[in-house]
Image (cartoon, rainbow, N blue to C red; front, side, top):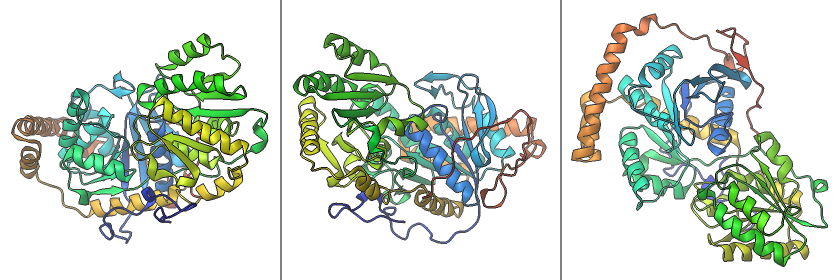
Length: 485
């Protein structure tokens, strides 16, 4: 269901509103689509993008669409694997360059991706994350092959530093002829439109979601004789781990009954270990390391307060999961976070040690004085805000819209690259597009589309699992189901 805008306590936040251009997406269902989700980030790697792709795919399968996922190999996980409901995942043998993102030359991935797109009869390529090189490669190759494209941006970027300038220029090229773009918050939409110089009419806002049945309160797991602050985050600079290292000693000194449980892994873990060692807080600060997604709820229900110290965030599913478990949320006021929860369920702070300490002290005071709602009451409020079924329905409308659009011929695509990306960058990427097209022609001559075997679909009508595995070595893994309630 579409959520209402922020209007008072208990009302859903504005990020859950329908796409920005009401009526621009057709409400009528046209037909089932063959969708390929592409990203460097997928299971067994854990994170918001990975969870988003999996849950969205499960719900789209339930709604009768064919969905496959393409990502790179993770360790020994290579080839084809099957997840719940016959969700087929291709783990490609591409080399990882940095932070789970593959190295790219554009052309090296074309033979593999083209073979998969033809074999699976894909009609829509849905790429995820600006950080994913494979996602951008897939968009580029899809347009060369005449396929429709959708891109979901899960992140926020700046405009001043060198890395942001280069990434934004790449995004401008990648999205200039993408059919439709989805952002997870209005702040994210504004950021993406400015970064990539996009027409706002082709950008929709569809938020993330959380399954309330996976994140339920359990007050009996909490120790009321102490106050427990939960942090579940990657321990990297962008997630504000340096701020956390300043908060812990200051508040632990002031509140002897305050404990921290920190879940997550990353290069900044060493800073937290040094803080714990320097201030002798081994009995009050627990570092759990990397968590499986199925274990996150069991960690959250042990706490009273959830702390998010992110320096940039497009949506932040972690605070929704924490609130669904009945925790009071204290978070930095950055990116799309103010859109996610109503003011009665979150204390927003500036991204500084002083402001976050004040926010935590306010939450501690409310907890001790009995001013906070009961965990079950918080859960009952949050569970009405975001559902994966609603996300899938709205994404389906995007697919229906782009499926009706005509594919640009090569000459018009080149003209758009040059006019949209500038005389230098435009001509460079127009030349790359020509080379990519010639490479595709060569591949079609060597291995024509007609001789590529057509994959046997693992799902039947309405997403039913048929158990018809085209490869005996494929593995079925039970990782969950469509989160619809």
